[in-house]
Image (cartoon, rainbow, N blue to C red):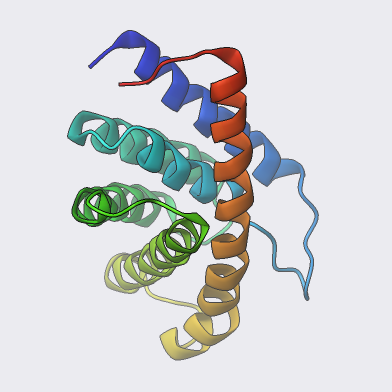
Length: 171
């Protein structure tokens, strides 16, 4: 894998991490999970298996360092790696069609939903959940899925335009 692509992935995740940390909550405390959005954008822009592994590990470690969920460190790493691998195969399959804003939004929403379910499932198995899983899915995962689906479309568009204007060539 090219060093330029690794640096680009790391830069995207760092931007997502910082934005996630400074973004205030909206809609009853919900907020865009910018780290997850940028993780998905990284996979869309560089759909290589090596990048999926790198992106999943880095995003998982960043999430683990800042989680407020009790015992959420390992579940964060598990969920990001598994989500990246699943999305890699989905993006590879969808590469036969033109990636448009609707597809990007669906991938962003699906990735967020998968991430939330995998996180909650692994957390339930490893440490237990503070409230029932159904309640967490209804109040946290589904609203975040909708918000991140929309956010992914905007971030992907902005990032694609910045790449085009800067002349950076990925792959």
